[in-house]
Image (cartoon, helix red, strand yellow):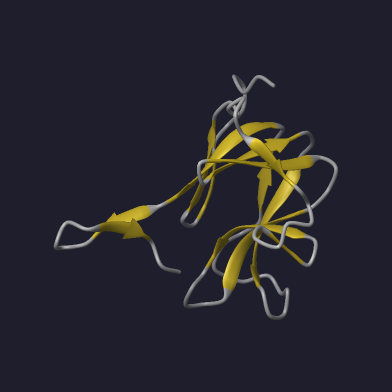
Amino acid sequence: MKHNNCKPVRQGDVYLHPSTIPASARRIEPTDPRYVRDGRYVLALGEVSGHAHVIDVTPEVELWEESGVLWLRVLGETPLRHVDLASDAPTTDHATGIIAPGERKLVIQQEVQPDGIVRPVLD
């Protein structure tokens, strides 16, 4: 799938960058408990807040993984929601985004600590 017209999507510390899924990537089954909870792909989980960036598992969304990196193939417009995992209620932290069709690489924002250590942003 081409991603030339595919635009990046950002929601908080989640960045979906237009990128072709590598041929060596494997498709994540929509029942894989490492990435799926209650019928949703969990793209990022707030370790402190219990909030998560999620996409509903539908036939129009595929999640792929290669060497610990995730990619999305979106075949139809898909909402990217930010929810409280315990209640499934939307949060007020981030508005729901719409992901247009295309392939994207999932990038989690990182921060550099004063001692020079780079780590993911904790939510």
